[in-house]
Every structure is written in C-alpha cells, then in structure tokens.
Image (cartoon, rainbow, N blue to C red):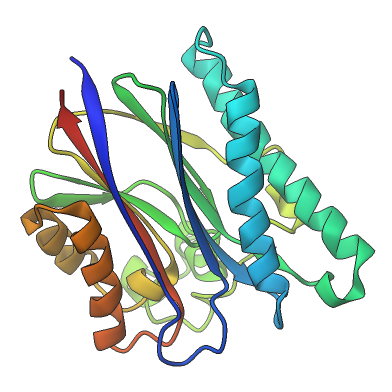
Length: 251
C-alpha cells in the first residue's frame, strides 16, 4: 500500500522565556522525509545554537547516507550515526567557545523513506508519539533522572510525572553519554496514523489522554499543531512549546 504524509508544525516562545531555544525542521527530499524537533539548553544563546545545529546536522547526514537499497538494519545504523555526528559537532563547538561549553539539546526525529514504515529516534526528553484509533503510544523513552528511577523501580511512573528530577537529563546532544546513538523504533504504518514530535513544553502540561483525543479529532494538521501549542500555553506551560504533527494518508 502506498502512503503520503501531511505535516504541520509550530514553535512558540511562550509567556515566560526571553528567547526560543527550541528548533523544528521538516526536510522533504524526493525519497526521504525527516521531521525533527530539538529543545536546547545551556543559557544565553547556547541552547538556541545547539538546537539549531541539531536540526541542521542530522537531516544533512541522513540525506547523505540513506541510500535507497539499504536494509532496515543498515537504516537504523545510519540514523544512529546521524545523531552521533550531531552530538560530536555540538560537543566540538562547546569545546572551542567558553560561552558554549555547557550547551546541549534534546532531539527527536521521524524518518520516512516513501515506504510502509516510520523510523523514530530520540535523545533527551523531547518525545515521539503514535496516535492510532484514538489511542496514544509513547515511542521514545525520556533520558531523565526521574525515568531512570522508574526503570530502577525506585519510583512509579505516576511519581515520575511530578518528581524533582523529571527535567534533569543524563543524556542529551552535547554529552558523552550519547555513545553509539539511541535505539531506533520502526513502526509499520496504517492509513490515519498521526505522529506527534514535541518538546516538554507541551508534554509537561498536557496529559497524553488529552493529546490523543484532541489530535484524533483534528482534520488539518497545521491547525492541529498550532492549537496544541496554544493549549500548552493556556494550561500554564512556562517553557517554549514546539511540535510537529504528521498524518499518514493512503495514496
């Protein structure tokens, strides 16, 4: 079955920040579509620079190395290497400039190669979700200390939502912990699927169930993305808010 994608995107400064450290990008090539969201950190302009570099470098590397004849295992390796390359370049920038030495960024990507699968990968706590049949599934794992405590069975998932370490990241672009890159998820597509890529400015205040209901009811993905940003601000988000909404349509 052949598919096509409809994509909407939105990035808002919000009501409390002086600058937008989030970056979003949708790159559409003849045989490749990449949606990418990054949430920078590091103070001053450093976070803004880190996130901007992440959304430039990763699609560049994917475009360069994702040839059409690669099998899924090789595709996974290329995606992981693209994230590692972004990490290496961000770390190098931080080493060269004392004003950027603490900069870093999250990153979450969805990659489609005109086939019947979506590839998803992320580092940090920006998330990817699949909304299918009005149900929502988180596709990425937060690399926060709170999530690490959940995985160690020290706290429950419910406790992690309000834990003081929920926004403390142990892995992000700009850190040595990225290693050989993150796990890559491969999702077989169905017509009507919606993918959400977003920063914690959205997920920190809007519950998953509300996201699922709202996204399922929208017919226009650009209007959907813009409305999600406004919902987050209306519900008290104190961060920048950014998201990409991808709709899968049978063609």
